[in-house]
Image (cartoon, rainbow, N blue to C red):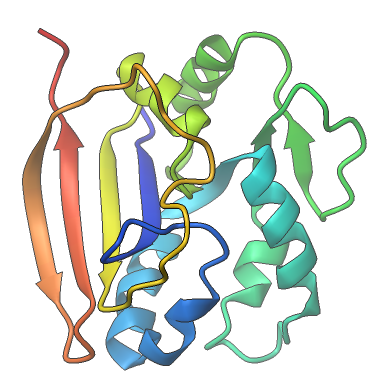
Length: 184
């Protein structure tokens, strides 16, 4: 069965939205860690807000420069969890139909490599609650943004995790990887 791995960039004050603040910290160490994640994945899952941001940004990047990741993001199979997106324009994108948990369960059962999910919002909360997220990687950046900390408040969502790995970069970025604990 394929693994679903969430990878989320976050500031010290919990901001995940519009991660333009990651630029100065995306150095050689980050490129290696990000490359390990994408090399092991042949699909990407995202909610509507993440799709809206990424589908505008990535097609503008130079696919011939391997350090940008643009060739991967623009060509990998993409799945969007949305009830309002009907005609995705980003290459190789499919909107999931029907029940989210059923659709992701079916994706995970298919042959293939890992599925990456970027961002942390209501889609991630639903999938963690359903036991479908295998790992969450928080890229904690030494930055304070001073803006609301989550794009979508996750009321009534609680989860516990076990730490499975930590990488500390010279830039101050900490990549903390967690496995969700099974609901008790």
